Length: 136
View 1 (cartoon, helix red, strand yellow):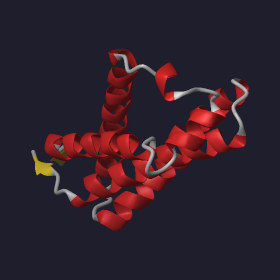
View 2 (cartoon, rainbow, N blue to C red):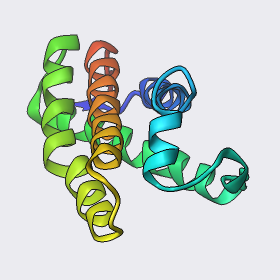
View 3 (cartoon, rainbow, N blue to C red):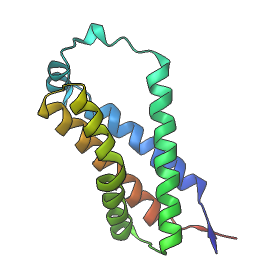
View 4 (spheres, one colour):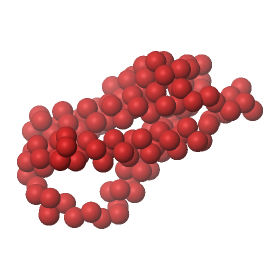
């Protein structure tokens, strides 16, 4: 039996955080996303709470993905990406889309946020699939 490689989980968490930083930067979707939620940069003063929650969510996603990979025997980047794709479609995107739809956000915000969750799950799956698990 293999056990979770916590270094791989940590790298997957850092990768998800980096994705979020880049995804919501001016280089990608910041302008459109802020317009969609009717906010300006000064309205979004950084406070530690949302960042801590994002980090915790990334830990849960990476740990859960590692567990699925371990229990299905999937290994390698490609299989990890497919597991991440399935997790993204089945578990991470739907709640984001539903909650934001009920908040009345426009489709562009749902697309940006949903796609970020999907890409994050795929990246986590790729990292965890590629990284060898530790033997018990």
